Image 1 (cartoon, rainbow, N blue to C red):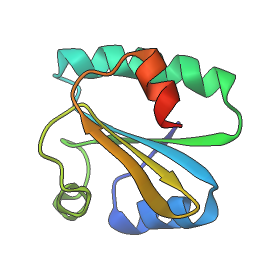
Image 2: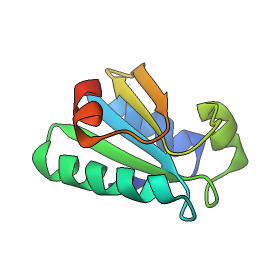
Image 3: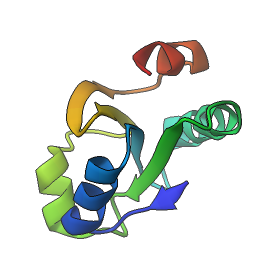
Image 4: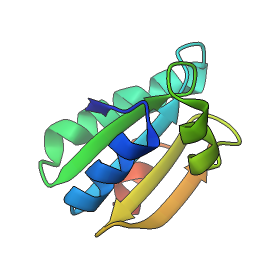
Length: 100
């Protein structure tokens, strides 16, 4: 999983990767810890997906604004540079796989 802290870092990954699963979370967030476990499992299974992590407490505020973060955990999926899915709140592993 690639940790991203700036808009430029995120844009580069999105533009250079086919499918990107972006997880936005915070270390103090209980549901985020569950989603992190699911994402880590999926990362081991899906070599065709680039996994990106943003911690809202450790990244630039500009990135939080750009992603329009209204709550955590938040999952966004990008395909060929375009956002195809965005959800806020706890998601199961199967729900995350459906988004890919």
